[in-house]
Length: 86
Length: 460
Image 1 (cartoon, rainbow over the protein chains, first blue to last red):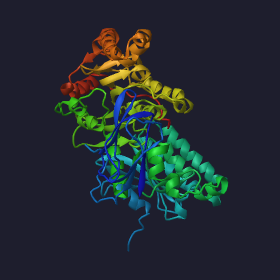
Image 2 (image 1 turned 90 degrees about the horizontal axis):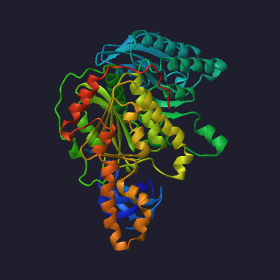
Image 3 (image 1 turned 45 degrees about the vertical axis):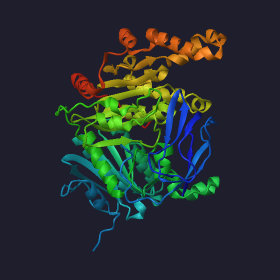
Image 4 (image 1 turned 180 degrees about the horizontal axis):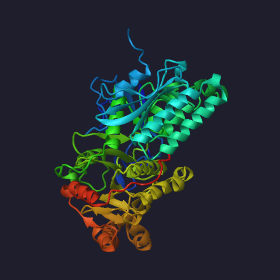
């Protein structure tokens, strides 16, 4: 299943940490955004393979803009309870 | 002979302590069953729709079963759990069944804020079956649970929208978008455990018995001041390890976190900005989410711990049109009204109007703590001096501007920002070290009179 990670708010793209073809795990940093004078990492909520990174460093993104497309892997049996990744 | 998994007694028995089932009503054609029992020793009253009869549809007789459950729960002043799997009103009974639902809504509302009311939705809960749970304090949704006012067929015939039950009212829409559901369970078993946890947390709040050990909570913050982080590990560090903890609305308005847990043995409610999401800004949904949580805790006498790291309100046309003024006002109201002990800890920054809303001194906080490097200000120092010294900065050559900004910001912080100034003014009571924060917060709550708000918990 393909998931689109979207921008939650207006921001500048400071860093792009993944590229198409990368395998990513839950909690991994995809991008680093700058908004409200803060550096806000965008973390993966699912694991899978990056299909496309739709933004580049320096882009100004608006709320709802697609950022990264991820092909989600079949859920592994190790999916933990609760949302904390601590 | 195997029992139908939709059997109401079976469903009740899966939640309560083994052997504690005590029926309050007969098993009959009413389509509803009420019972009492215990959960980890705490008495509870429960009722369950009988989904083996007419899909759990409710009429007059079923409503009276719920009313007797409420009478029992109110008499014993214990939590009540409603298990829902109901297509709504019994059509054959006509207006009588509408009247019956109204009586149930009224009973739920009369009990609101007096006894904890938990709803478990195991199957489709439509129409009145949706509003019953919606009036209670917490809704737990099992994987097959669906909540909607009108089902897919009606939606399609009226609006032309083609949607299935899951997309209309399943875990995804209610967990992330609507805020209708507080807890999304991963399995039926998980949903039963959530109910048990909530009953323990709200029905058996305990006292500050163990002294607990302090740990350095600053370890959960990143080194850089500008860097956003997930606040969950900080909350986990604050609360007792290995004891009951239940986050409410984890996916909806995730820029604020509302969690019930225990601090040195006693139930507390934690409200925390989460910088990882929207930078931790307050917005209309998060203010509303926190306001409802604060009012629920206040009505049941659960003390509040407020962890503040907030850059402000989220700016934008969308927010204004979404009613951030009206919905944000709910949080100001909720904190101002609350009489439970409520302790604030400013970990990093508290800016502007959002500073006020996060249980500030002015709203009547029991105690406001701050960590040594915390900042309380109208806005960040750099942003402030850019406004205050716009002309001077504009006249400077580009290569000198950054240095000047830093200099002005440092100066500005001295007179208006830093935590020392906040203490001087009296908006922060005490600077505490991160490694002593747990015990300082627990002591501050324990020292305050244990009170409980005398109000209902309207589903804000």
